[in-house]
Image (cartoon, rainbow, N blue to C red; front, side, top):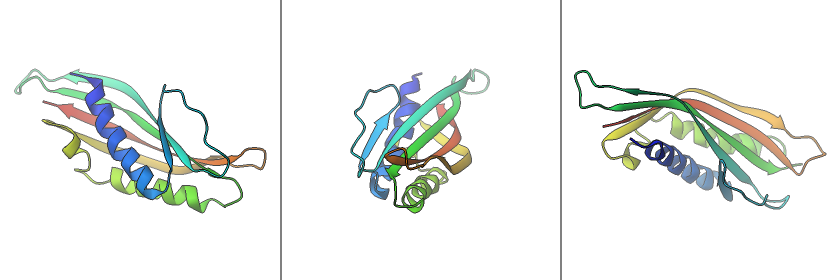
Length: 143
């Protein structure tokens, strides 16, 4: 079992939708980056693994992994909340599709639940970007 298979499926689907919705840059947790300019939109994807179970009764020893994914969408200040909310909505829509991640995993699947947001976490005139966050719990299963 590898956490990277579950992480990869979630990051690939989420990053693709972020780009399609207008986030020019997508960054990943624990990977250093230089913040884009004040007029550019970008996002960061963060995953936390919370639990893992190994099913050894009745099946082939599948691994069942759970955790949380959080995305921070940063849009230029002075444009209102809509740009960040629109990007967040597109990601939430794809997270809600039951089979959205299946094409990225051989012999496994990821399901999202408890979708939350967008929540405004920063957006005053003292910063260059307004930030919205969305999150969801996930369960990933590998055969």
